[in-house]
Image (cartoon, rainbow, N blue to C red; front, side, top):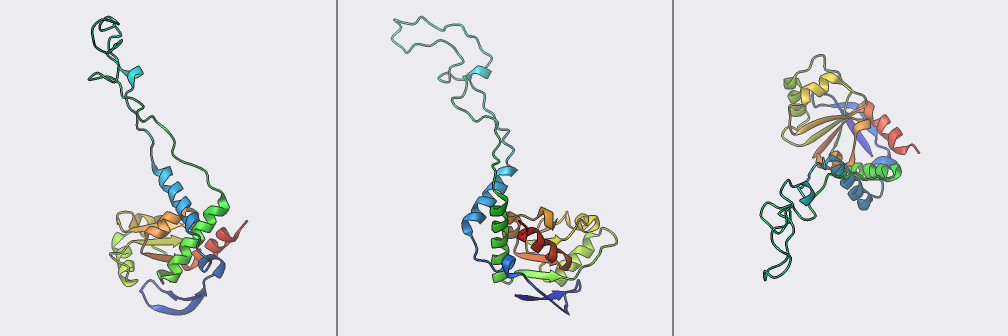
Length: 210
């Protein structure tokens, strides 16, 4: 699949790049995508929830009434979950929700997500450029030129660019990531992918390596 390279003014250049079929035109694996997105979302959970169970309650442990002869159920402590102010039964405890996935499966998921974006013509290849100073207005002008303003946009660059990151971090619909930070969730969550020309080779090397 060939894509015309666009410059930062939003105009097509004379250059064309070929998207590697092994990355952008595979048979998508929906289950791999599901597992990778599930792992990503699970890793975002803090897991710090904690309920106050009966062992954590500070109340008297004095036996409330005699064991037998009252006509009611036996009761040994005000910490019992049956009483108002007592501990919770089987409440949530702090835990780690993350789980492991094999590297090959994660690469398959990212290639599947990129394939879907390529099929839907939601990939723009942008000519490499530099931002001299961090300026949100300049970044907004770029989005307007590419006709992706107001849409969820993921911009993928080959290596970290501080000025570009600072220019975009205040915009809720745009996100700038390096190839090493690229994940399946962000690819699918974005309406458009803007690939810096220099990032293509790094993406292919990363996803095709053993």
